Image (cartoon, rainbow, N blue to C red; front, side, top):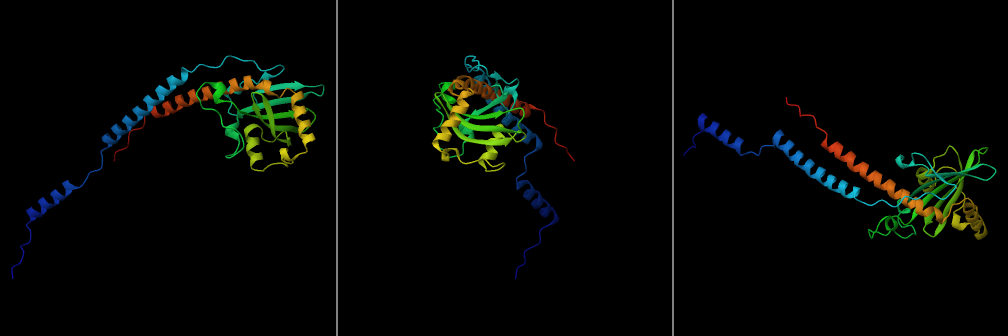
Length: 250
């Protein structure tokens, strides 16, 4: 019987070298850095193009709020909080109004028309607004709060409740109310007697909460969205373009 000869030491060495060269090697650190830089350049170029495009957008004409409402100082730079404020009546009622897009507040499937996206400007892109109205008196520890839908020709009340002045307000209050948390919210507004609903509509109408607020709040929200978008492009670009620490080599 013939026996196969064992490979020599030299042959075994050559075989190991061949096997080692045939295995795929992981990309080098230099290759990974070059690939990451290329991706960063693509993102930065796209961000710059969109940033310049946003800056070319024509802002709406400057509109003043209906008197005696005044703009809350610094409201444009705050993520949440009141936009307009006024005093009312001999009792010294304090009224503040916060605003957001109605589509951003109402839950999926809610019964309201979606914003038009025809691209024709702020009047088409922000056509339905959500208001959080807070009405309080200095001597009271509670405030009357209304959640309303504001349209170019009407105001609709979604809910009304009494809340502690120390409770969250604005979008935070809306989120808590939607989940059924916090203080007792009262009955669903549409389940109230029609005469009670009409009385509440007259109550807010007497305090200047009506469709006359729409042109100012629509323009204000457009400017706020524009500012936030420009700020976002800048922030993301800064993070991506910041120098990364060199990988440590052992």
